[in-house]
Length: 433
Image (tube, rainbow, N blue to C red):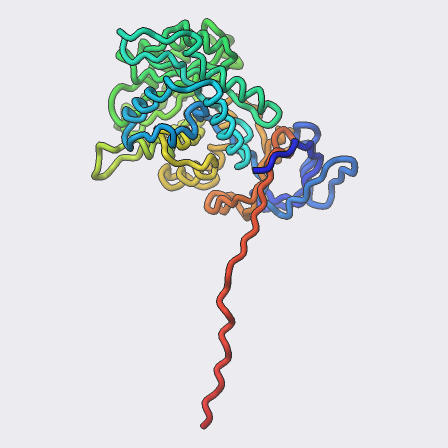
């Protein structure tokens, strides 16, 4: 991967929109200022890119990553298994990590996302308290904040290229003062995994209380199992009770929500109604949850996904992300939103257009980011890809891509393919009579 400085772009020529129009797109700073039929706009003093008919889309946004864990699988060599095995192997490795190690892997993973078109990332970062039981002494504050300090460093380094939001992932045994210390490092939201606690509902309340004290939003790992407790409705009702003026500008979301996909119709309807009333953003994570869930069910293995269609049918914003990439929780992953979109079509039974919206426009909404895309007045976070339609883009995921973040060219990948063809069939001479 070659490095280059970002360039401000003033005009995109010959861009194909999903509705079939071929257009020029003018950009003023970080905003799309005009969209018109190709050949009708000009910007003589600005950088102009000819897209050559590439499909122009809203750039993807990754609403749920773990950059502190990314690319650690080779070092950990974790066993194949379910969520419990992944947590155990990661916890053992985490005690050996340095700030520099975490930052190096996180930076590499973030730039891979950017190269594939993702211009905004929300990443969870572990509160590294080091406790496995209540009796174990917690780590020092300095140790607990290693991951946070690494990711704040990477966020600052890449600020001119992409937007990175940080969530403090507090395990049930992470003491409040460790969570507060991580927030003090510059982390943006409170997170956690209450379904893993001895008292899941109490842990939801604890994390919401921390967020209220700090005046920040919340993004929880929620009900990441095919059975067991349901905390999503409790979380949703608690958010609904927060006065609207106090919620203004704050984001509340829930990731995974796998248990929701296994509930019966009546209970499902109850929880979905609570989620809709709270306007919680839901983030489904097909790659990792299809891998982690269902190991105990060798026959008719259930899907590890939330109830996507029930949620969207109720008007809930459902975004999608990749979650883990090549770590104990997922040994594969290409850091490409089109991989997530393709799996949503196959496993989530949504259309390619719906799937792409879940990894772009809806993801940005759940993350609290301004709307983007090739529409006048929107943020110029754009992906141009060698494709003829959204379905073609999701199906083939061409690596030929041009990426703009806030109107600046930040990544370009060009592909040249040569394919051997069979030699022409020689004409067969007629046999003499």
